[in-house]
Image 1 (spheres, rainbow, N blue to C red):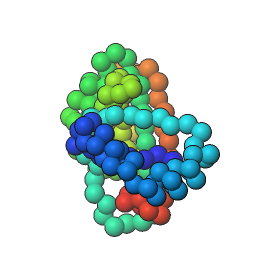
Image 2: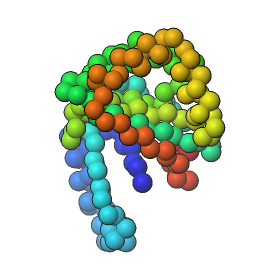
Image 3: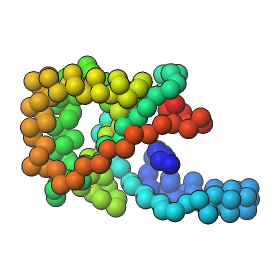
Length: 162
């Protein structure tokens, strides 16, 4: 399960977590129930490059979260390069959110895409690959990239991004 939370600051996050720990139902009911199911937790603090788009009310969406670990300093270059080509890429499927990493990995370029289906994803990516502007952007990537991960996400029934 992936959770994407927005906080105004790290202090705001800490304050809200403190308030949650005062919630008796959370501490005494929810946490003991869910704890056996949690095998691992990874936390990322990210800086927005492209804000998450608000829900447009559609359902049945599929999301792709792409995380690129870059060479030292490469995330900022990915972000700047992407801002310059965003309009060209948005023609095929608009980006849903993008960030650079802060903690624990400052050298990450993280981006989130929304599709109606896996087929739409394949079609959008194939069309974008033919676009000369997008090809020029992609050509700048290999020297910045150390590792790449792509995860397909299906929103839960309570997710605002469903």
